[in-house]
Image 1 (cartoon, rainbow, N blue to C red):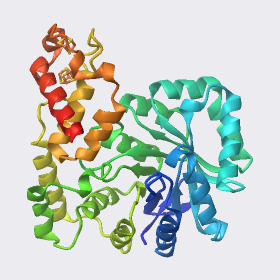
Image 2: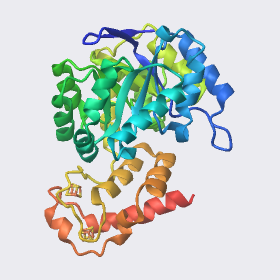
Image 3: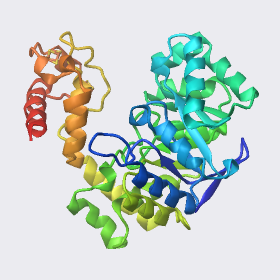
Length: 377
Ligand code: SF4
Ligand code: SF4
C-alpha cells in the first residue's frame, strides 16, 4: 500500500481510503454485514488505514457498522473519518448532540478526522454564524477529534472563501479527470496545495461513470494496459497529484476492493504516455455532450422555475457516460418536478442571455422527453 504524509499534521494515510457509503446491501436495503465486513477486513489486511463514513450514510447505519468492525483492530492502526450533517444543525446544541451521537454510534473515544459535511455557500455561513467552527476547535483541543476539516460541494469562489478562512487540517473535494473544472476543481486543489492543506479526494471515478466507459472509448486504455480496469486509470490520475493524500473509493463488491488494492499497492503515477491516453479519453468523452452548456448560469433565474443548467447537466451527463442508473437517480429522484424542463413556457428570455447561443427551448423539450423515456425503462 502506498502511504502519503500529511506534513502539516504529521500523519501517514494510506493513499486508498475506504468510502463507507456504498457497502453491499440486502434486498431490504440494509447493509449486507457479513459481506461488507469481509471487504473491510480485506482492505485492512491490504494496508488501508483510512475509513470514511458519515452520519447519513446507509440511512445512519454506516457509522455503527464501520465502528464495530474496526473495533477488532488496534485503535492506533487505523483512522476513522466522519462528518457533521450541517443541514441538520439549527442550533449549536444540535451540533453537540449530533457529535455525541456519532461517537456513541462509532463506539470510539475520539474521531481521527472530523468534517463539516458538504459545505456550500449557505451551510458555511450557518456554521460560522452558529459558532460551530469554535465548537469543533474546542473538540480538537479536548482531543475528542484529532483533525478538523470539511467536505465541499459548491463553486470555486465559495471554496476559496472557506479554505482561506482558517488553517484547516485537511479538506475533501470532488476531483477526477472529467471534473477538473467542476466545483473546487483543479483550481481548488492547487489553492489547497499552496496553502499547505492536504486534500482528500472523493468521487475519483465520478460515481461509477469512469469505471464503466463506452467500449470504443476505453479501447485507448486497453491498448496500453490490456489488464487494467477503467477505474484504475481514474484512480491513478488522481493519485498522480502529490497533494492528494487519500483517495476515497466507495467500494460495493470484493472485486472493487481487490482491484483497488492492486492499483494502490506499489502505486505507480501515470507516465507521459498514459497521461496522454487520459487526455484523449477525456476529449472523446467531452465530445459526446448533447449541447455546449457551460453551467455559467447567465440564463438564470428562469421566471418559471426551470433549472436550465441543471437539466442540461443531467442530459449531457447521459450523453457522455450513457449511465442509465445515474440518470434514474438524478432525474427520477433528485431533481424537483418544479425545476424540470416541462415547466418551460417558451418565453425565450433565457436564450437572449446565453453566451453559447444555445437553442434552450428546443433542447429543453429533448431533455424532458429523452430523460423521461430513459427513466420509464
Ligand atoms: S424559455 Fe423556458 S426556460 Fe427559458 S426563461 Fe422562458 S420559461 Fe424559462
Ligand atoms: S446561459 Fe447558456 S451556457 Fe450558461 S447555463 Fe444557461 S444555457 Fe447553459
